[in-house]
Image (cartoon, rainbow, N blue to C red; front, side, top):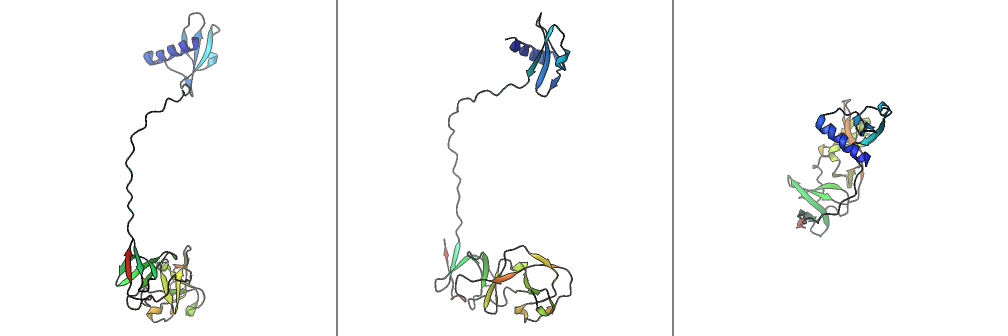
Length: 224
């Protein structure tokens, strides 16, 4: 009872009389006069006189018990999620080729899900055209010998070399100083690279397409 009364008087004096409060952390220290109940705030408990009792009061009391649960609120609006239709590409023999994202200059860019790559199909013969996309092969030795690479523009594309199909490897690109290069679509002539600046390139490897090339034309499309 005395502690409760002391706490009420202390906070009343702080609010109404502006008495300076010496607080350390979350604790207020005071001296309680045993004879007349007079209270005073001190900086340390050692400042109390023999006729006083040193008291310590927390500025923040303990957390009370949780209250009863409130009534349930009204249900919120359901988010509307509309799936965008996709266009599936088939050849004349009903081979599923992939998903059609774009067309450009008459060439169909088909995304092949199993390879996570794009393939450009020529409307003329149903194969990858030797002139599109133009592929440059770079070599770390002269005369187009040694290890070969393709530039990073080919990262997501399937390309054709002779009768085989290739794709860049899914790996971070390397910046290399390469010595020679050639492009099959540009006559296949090996050229010396005189620049000593490195270029970002990727290794590549042969891939197996999930359908037979060249595909049978005409192609047809189905929205889903």
